[in-house]
Length: 514
Ligand code: FAD
Ligand code: DLZ
Ligand code: SF4
Image 1 (tube, rainbow, N blue to C red):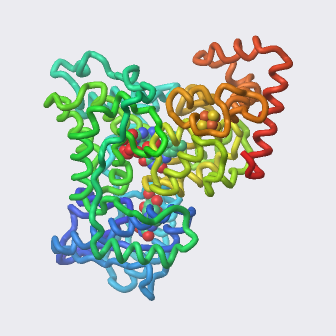
Image 2 (cartoon, rainbow, N blue to C red; image 1 turned 30 degrees about the vertical axis):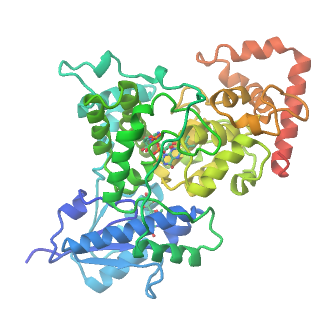
């Protein structure tokens, strides 16, 4: 008789190709899954995110049971539930007496630390297995990063293309003769730009039960719970992926950065929540996109642009997280200490662009990359908001948010709090960028062409004040040659007016008058 193993599956590990499942003995081993308050409340998660994960977890457990696995599934309201993952592992060990416990490494440092500590407290060995869904292992990333001064995503991405043979010609050259078609992907919205139709899924009894649970147990949770039309099974997520690849991917590249009033999704895939939770494998999504290109159904700039996000950015971001944690979370290179304005939660601001992005966030637990980076992120950067507070907000409000992916995006890409480790130049922009890339300014109380006075778009003075505050750091940046020349040409009077205006905006943002 071999040993019996307790195999733990976390809420964002819903993949059957992980070793904890593929190596299981269906007769002897038990799969443990647990809905716990500790995970549901460690930040103020969006209620749709909680509902999505609990429903996906319950469906996944059902699928395992149907496949003959023995599953111990602890529901949130089970009377014996200790309400923490550690507690549930310890309780299962005490009741089932397995010979060992196995878990796939978690996606957050705090849990990884917790499991290392738990290892010492358990009476049986605890094995933490690598998460093989990722396309770059920790060792591979360290090997790549170790040989370099700066960690630039572009070089990492090329290596990943070669290693996985994605969009490569047989002679080793990239398809189309170039690695990157980004220059063709940043068009402003055209008059004809419309959001393509999306598919949605009927809610079954399991999902209805979870919605009722979330409504009752998280009455003060952030966000709008219904309508709820997330995919909650792998089959549904595969249908959503197929719909995207066939109908939306061909136009993905062109308007990747465009933003339109009332259109939270445009041509984005909406697949991040499914990939991150384990319903889709990143490699299959890249391969499906490549196949569409090779069949002639998607142009190269679209397929390449999309694949770069997953094979490049997603893996690179994860590498950065694990390489620089736990120190990474404490970084505040720009010395930003302002409190997060309340309107990030309430959505109540006169700035039409932020109001719209915050409404998408509240209603859908989603907003697309450029809204996260150039609206909510850009504003927090310019206004000098404390990175820790911004990080906790992003970690809470999106259905795809887990610290391994959210923290480097927020602290590194959006806030430059890591001092340029992840992005060589800050993603700072004034109202003119938002005017060009969206139609938000048409319905705004402010005017993007005005920088000082009642009608002044707050992004303008805040932009210049930000640049002036950080002159010493950024004037040395070779990628920002024109900024300080323009600032100097303005003259002292205009500079003072802009900086005073910025102070008024910062005061107004804290009193809810912005
Ligand atoms: P698409 O635009 O369709 O992109 C395709 C896929 O590429 C995504 O599904 C995702 O898997 C991947 N991807 C794209 N950009 C990134 C990126 N920068 N980092 C990692 N993966 C990427 N993404 C998360 O998954 N979770 C987060 O918590 C998260 N927080 C963010 C916070 C900030 C401040 C910023 C600027 C970005 C954040 N992102 C995060 C990255 C990106 O915005 C989302 O992955 C994307 O908006 C998800 O929508 P989509 O699936 O429609 O993406
Ligand atoms: C995000 C989340 C939530 C809301 N609830 C649970 C839960 O009840 N049980 C669980 O196993 N996982 C949950 N998760 C996901 C974990 O927080 C996730 O595994 C970590 O964030 C690591 O990525
Ligand atoms: Fe945003 Fe400024 Fe345009 Fe208003 S005017 S929508 S605040 S960029």
